[in-house]
Image (tube, rainbow, N blue to C red; front, side, top):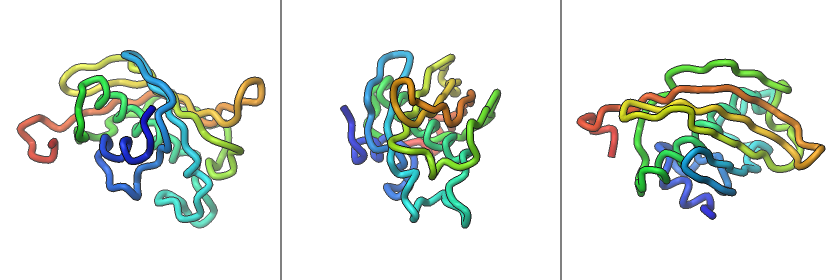
Length: 151
């Protein structure tokens, strides 16, 4: 559906921080995106020992940002902050050693003009071999429209 360039235009980061490769599917309630950037040795969130599993939260937040932009029909990103995390569970320590592509699913729980709440899950592999890497819930809070940081 959407590729990396289209995704980069919908998130409030520079192109080098766009972590998602493609949108696999989306509807009014959810989005699923795919990525292979977790194996990149030059990953912008990589530490000396590798890419921590917690980087998966940023991937999921980017998926949610794309979802929100698609729902609103926006062609540019809306800026905000990740305001809270709940029930985050990691199935492993490192994201970089997950085999194959990663799929990030974000499901909209609540949305209003001030922000949104999403549940998320990242999986590696497919079918019966799929491994849940990280799951949880986050709240996004948007900057007010009068704030010039929001295009």
